[in-house]
Amino acid sequence: MSITSGVGLVSQEEKFGRVIAGDSYKNYLLLKPNEFAYNKSATKEYPEGFLALYSGTALAAVPNSIFTCFRINGESPDVRFLNYQFSDNLHGRWLRKFIQVGARAHGSLSINDSDLMALPVPVPSGTTSVAEQQKIADCLSSLDELIAAQARKVDALKTHKKGLMQQLFPREGETLPRLRFPEFQNAGEWVNEPLGELGEVITGKTPSTKESELWGGDILFITPTDISEDEKYQQATARKVVETKSTKVLPTGSIVYTCIASIGKMALTVGPSITNQQINAVVPNKKTAGEFIYYALLNLTPWIKTIPASSTLPIINKTEFSKIVIGYSEDKDEQQRIAACLTSLDTLITAAVQELDTLKTHRKGLMQQLFPSTEVLEA
Image (cartoon, rainbow, N blue to C red; front, side, top):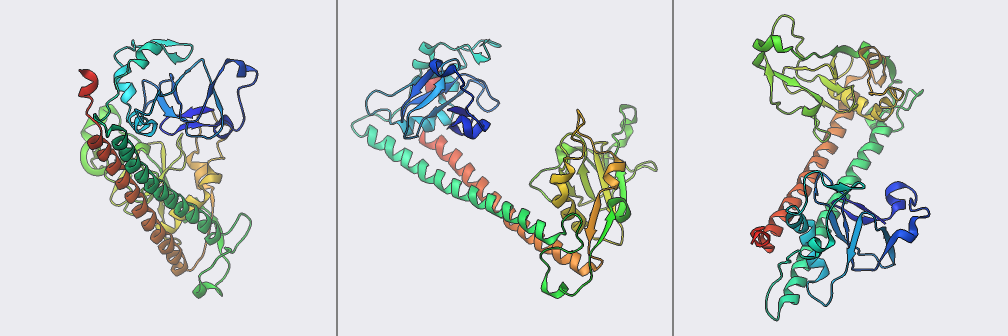
């Protein structure tokens, strides 16, 4: 087994695609169901290491070089109750006082097992302690099931959208989509043209420090960090610029597409904007609608990402970007019908994601109410 921070113990085959133990099994610790494994490797979310309950049914093994394993003696604390506290970083808030900055040994945090095992665990008092622990665990478990079901719904909608786009746009070398709306069944074949023929391609530029007078205007300044994978329309940005004669302002409805490093992050502008040099923008001409080009590029993005495969820093320059061939119907009504269909699906996905976020926020708040504050550990 290995560990995925925030998730828990997973098989090495699942995480790495193969078992990486090799001849090291003799140095592995045997892990039984309902035992805990503490990984001493720091992560961004769990800088003091991640601690998880092994909930499998078979025997498992973890490397002793970075893991400390233990079991609970007796029925209290309840293992699921304790595991929820570990997921809330109960151990991390305790261990951080023992970890020296930069104290690492062979890639793992230098932590004494005695310090870990001295962790004070808050549990309800009295004869009903175990019953209360189990009730709390049951409550959170049922909420986790709702969250997991909602996450599957989001994934299903995203998978459906991906498959639908592949049907609504022609495949490479073809001039007709596999799926066409009834009112356009007898319409003509689609046309293939380079992106540069369907609109003006503009590479942005960041104003230099000498041009400080350009900052603080009304024009949105967009960088890749301002573009969200889950947002179709470009949101407000932290910085704005002043429009000048040399400023190439993108009109509303332009497509901004990241072409360096995080290739494929894209959005539609909702107001006058300019971008930095990591973004190529498309201002559509009369041949195609902006939303149609947005979805056409979104459908092609998995292939577009392979273009700069040989580069150390993945880059698609303006010339390469302009040459990307887009298939489109010359009937603007069909373009708009496709865009409207995918937009309605995006609306469903956004609503599902918001519901998932609401459940996660509720879970976080509920955890704060069900367990004592961190002051318990600081006493």
